[in-house]
Image 1 (spheres, rainbow over the protein chains, first blue to last red):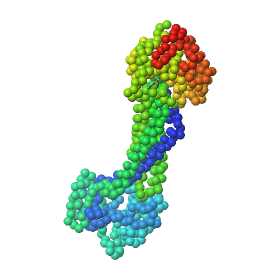
Image 2 (image 1 turned 180 degrees about the horizontal axis):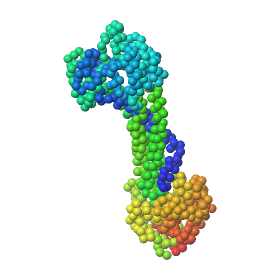
Image 3 (image 1 turned 60 degrees about the vertical axis):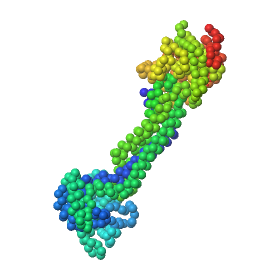
Image 4 (image 1 turned 60 degrees about the horizontal axis):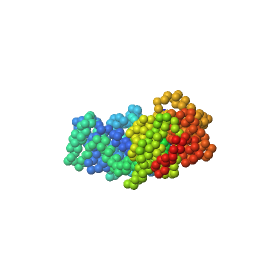
Length: 387
Length: 229
Ligand SMILES: Nc1ncnc2c1ncn2[C@@H]1O[C@H](COP(=O)(O)OP(=O)(O)OP(=O)(O)O)[C@@H](O)[C@H]1O
Ligand SMILES: [Mg+2]
């Protein structure tokens, strides 16, 4: 059909203008995609967390520990099928640079990995971890980043817990899918507890938080109430919530930043709309005389609207696809550059869907005004235009 | 000869805001079938306005225009568009070809509104391009053609649908003498050989000579001059 031919010929009438517009859209779509990916990467911890796991922490703050003795009591709560616990260790690895930072925890070696089936580790490595007091398990990304293998020794300078800490790598875990954080280190809590006994001013038998496996996610709030009720009158009151809610309370600290990133991503969509709208209005205005000629020949306003909408969509889709193709290598580079800030940096299907969707939407929206206007021009007026 | 175009008591008033600009007043004109008529008159006398009304791209304020039995003032926009595509071939002063389409594609354009088969379309387009003498320029774009050649493409586009009436608004107005002569000879041929009815506006007395009859328009009214009648 001639209309399609005319659309494609019109797109390349002003080659430079169209190419610049397509590139403008591509860059904007890419920026949108990256911003969305930053937001989703930030939320990845929350999304990956399980709703059948509960976290109990000190009611006042996460930084105050809970007594080890709670473990056996919590174990007896109906609905709880497994209990583990962990402490935030901190410390410094190598030079004090952001890229050397990653999360390090002291965990209950006997139970921890059972409660986190999404961390995959060969059983012989896990056995070694359970047996060797100063061993550790690290995520695959950390192993790759620092070129570490099983048997290597990692040395940390403690901050919360002073001293020099050496851990032998007993195992390397991988995530069950690409949305799982592979940038953590776990070492046996028993080793930490043993060492703090010899540090003046540090008490032993203290736990950062408890992790409970429950048999039914629906009973999460009842189980939480029962646990918190048990310690209502003790000095270390607990606050129990689902792991999701717990993760969320961290993420929400940076909520303002996330909201502004999201806002900026929508502003970018607005900018593409203006760029394409401007191009389409310019093109339509230049061609008023041609549209009047087409109408004289007997073509209707609908055909003219289709010409303009088709041209706008062609440009926006070309820009969108190009932007999408540019996003993947860039997101990979970005994720590799900051593996520990964004342990999981994946362009989600929902982001791809939004990028494509917004490209289409922008293409349509940018052509509404010029196509409406051009399809309604009177032939006599159009022919009088000097062009 | 039967009357093809009947313009009855037509008035056209343009409005600029609340100001009325009367252009044509109670104008009547008959064009017999097979006629080649030239319309002359000073600038601003309403020649283009009259052509626009006859070709159905503008509507009269009052009066009726009947062409081959159809009162075109009574048609709605869509009907009028269809009517134009079947009945009118328009030749403009500035050719008005679509710059991104080749000569062939420009001529083929009006056929998109017909139900002709691909093969029939091809035959027609090649046929009319042959008549206007541009068979060897089919794949050229307008900007690769001279003014005279572009106007010949425009004529081919105007006749490819085999319209009832050919309308030309100063078709030679932008051309040199030689090219103008070629265009006029072509229109003469369309009239004689293909029995096309032609109404053409011109400022050029030499061009008017090619027509059978010349009518003069003065301040929106036709002069009684009987030239050729
Ligand atoms: N759309 C319009 N709005 C207002 N006035 C108009 C419009 N179109 C034409 N006119 C006026 O109508 C009058 C006749 O215009 P028209 O174009 O028909 O003249 P013309 O005889 O073709 O002149 P020319 O030889 O210069 O082409 C002029 O005074 C013109 O200004
Ligand atoms: Mg005129």
